Length: 428
Image 1 (cartoon, rainbow, N blue to C red):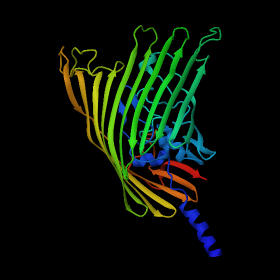
Image 2 (tube, one colour; image 1 turned 120 degrees about the horizontal axis):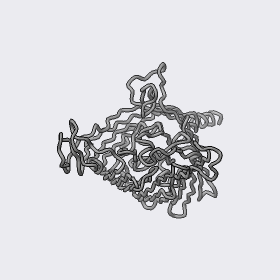
Image 3 (cartoon, rainbow, N blue to C red; image 1 turned 90 degrees about the vertical axis):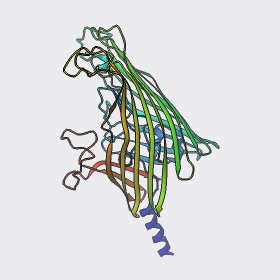
Image 4 (cartoon, one colour; image 1 turned 180 degrees about the horizontal axis):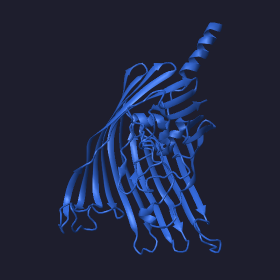
């Protein structure tokens, strides 16, 4: 009897939970493409082609599978999900994005604050493209709330909120009533029924407003996304649409500036069980991003010359990404994984552009090849009972840190930061 008891205890300690969810895991396995104009935009926060607990941020029905679960990403964010009355669950997640001024999609230039690739998280930080010389103010206290249930159909709802207010920024005390505010609201609903996993999300009531003397400025963010996944044995086809619109009126301006993305994506993922505890995951997607960007700089003529003010501001991105990932249980206490992403196609087609010296006529339908994405990453999970420590190997983060080191740097060792990203999760 004692022998069987010891075997049971050891098995529970070594095996633990099969669930994984972390920025580190997704940074290795890969996500959807990011699209860049004067802002950086993603399609969803999570993965469309494989299962991960982080997918609750686009389909909150997955909270039903996350019951009694807590996760923390070192230096970034974390949250927990709790079961109630068996058929219902709720969750709270804090600081998604990893900083008080984290941004979602639109923001200052093309930078992102999240350190794992393709994880653009909440907040609203209007940059100079929209507010000009006005004082910028990032959102703070990013908070995500979830509720979900299984009443024959799994369903879930999610609300994200962030806010900041400053009545002192650059103002003398005599200016009473002047202030800068910045607020962010995002909502999602989703379901799981007969293999179908539909989801809908919206960003609204999201606004930067500056009423300070000489800085009267506004900026708005509106988004809409809709999509569905379908699971059939090891196959996961998906389709989605994401509309992103950021706009604003700068200091002293009379006309509005805006950037608008219309992102269409379709693809299929497949999970093959190669051996016990070994999974080989593949994904092939086709993405179209149609952009109208009033805030962008026009493409200048080579050697100078006259340029149309709208040249290069309207374009379409065509991306065909291929993802390959391997996740293997090396031992009962160690999982190793690796991921490769390669853009088979990454093209940009300008509606109007001009790169001819002295030309006054813009060329139409000009195709330009982008650098594309090629990444090969490696990571692991250490299991201590139900406690899992996920990592992505590297000596920095992505994007590059102050030393120019990135998660994709080929130099990795115990003497140069073995873990570029580190997360802990626990199921009970």
